[in-house]
Length: 394
Image (cartoon, rainbow, N blue to C red):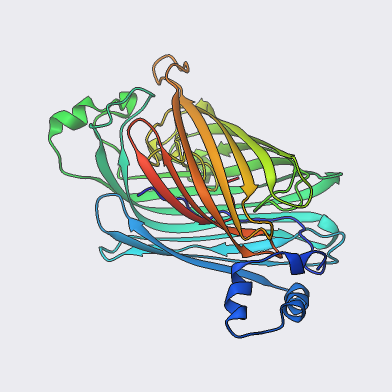
């Protein structure tokens, strides 16, 4: 089973605006109807609450074997006047296996009053198994090894408003991989893995530590389920040995998204997402190299195993059509396709392109914050994955 971690950080869907809520339906309405509560009164009370919560349990298989159990939770709230302040969110989506593997991710997007300042954070601790196929876009799907490691991530940035929906800032990023261990396999398989100048033996730990410069344009009203708008983010990261990094290196991540709505009062929308992630200078530790499924929120590459393709550069493109099935917005569906390529490590050119496609069902969990439960299935040449999530993929 493929896994998609929950990524939720949203902007200004007004809680207090109850216009049209009576005609909409969500899973909370279904549960409350069991207790025969007055829907109109309930909608009004829900909209006035300072916090909106969403929760979903999921389960599936983990890399290397074992059953993984996860819970996706998010809380959304305002820090100032709803008409001038965007929605802040905190998400926590832990998962664990009976074999002792676990992931504890804590993410936050906090907009201060009147959107004067944005602070965003991503803190994770992981005891994690993951397959690796080596570098480049033409690796053998059958020649993979299980890489187990512990991982600490600490990404925190502060962005100041410099124009209408324009933000500029900086922060600090830390990636610390330790206790890295390759499974015991036939040495011939490891020798055949295209690790290039990383050799046939990986380091047992690596650290990347340094400042990041952030630029953002975001006109979406709600990023967990955007009804329209544009998103453009650029992050340039520096990693310095004097700040504890294993190597000096730099990278750039450019993320662009556009949403085309065809109707105003119901979901009927085309969403487009593309990003470029590249190493610009220096030698990067193996696990920090660009890899499919390792974008900031781990939402790209539905239809591929996470980490399937890795190299110095990665280009990604995805489009998704989203539409309500029922007039009350409770049921919906999506169809999507994506394609990506990683550069060949020797030569640094994009040669091999990897497409995938899929479809999914949507169930409205919270009509006030527009949160959907997503159940997607996607397939590529060598893999089929099932993905359960809160919120849209992008």
